[in-house]
Length: 198
Image: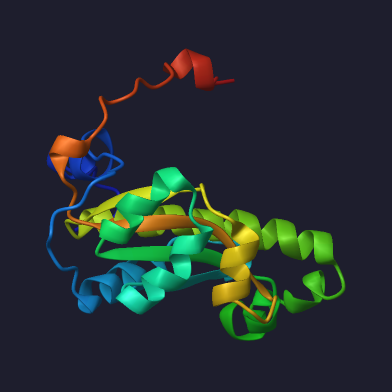
């Protein structure tokens, strides 16, 4: 199959036009193998200089959920505890140490050493891209997702990334969504409101 062939409309619907952000979850297990497969698919999405700063903790066990619960905003607590898995999507501020292996075409590590603002900007931007790729990979594998930013980042970082070199970005509930708990779908901006062709 050529990479230049458009996807069929059914695939686009599953990834974008019919996919929803879920708030409720069916009582159906998500196998570890599906989470691994989604990561292995999504890691091929582009990042600048192949920097790949995203780090992920999949919170699944009751013990891990109990560690996450105190950091959640009240409106996110119930749905997160009910989700089969919750991914803490984070970024590694030492990502550049992997660049000699990940981007051997140039001495990309030297671009970042000692430049904390560039490290932070690059890590945050590219990990956010990688998180979006992960959402699409999970949807492609038949799973539903519910991204959230309502949580205490400092508390999550202290609990799950105590070394200080990895920072949380956002949380992502993962499972098989309960359609009855969906909100009505919100509208989107028209092309003319968000884009120009020059």
